[in-house]
Length: 168
Image 1 (tube, helix red, strand yellow):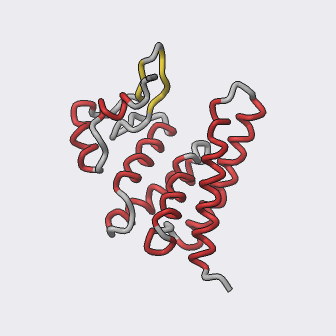
Image 2: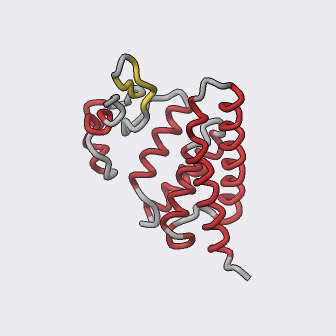
């Protein structure tokens, strides 16, 4: 019989792989494709919620680096499930404090959750879109401190990050 951690790791990585293959649907002009994306992320978010209720945050020690990153990606994309994002955020904070999760990933999830709550982000990780070739980040709570906060979480400077969203 397969070890529970190995089965969970495989399930998480499979969910994240499906998420990545389907992510082009998120911004499709076809409403049916957008709906397919929302259904996929909702199904994945529901399952991650179950996993977190049953056994906490899937740390790298328990499921491996790839599966732990997969869990973060699933939480990150659970945009219409704030309860899942908030629960993941709470558990990830505890895991980061214990040295069992990535502070960079926590920063991205924190910002994503704040933006989904209609609030200003902390680390400047969320981009609202690109207009006339210029990336438009969501507003930051303390823009003058954003690079210091980013550095503390292991994230490159804000201007370098935003430049990646500019069309080549």
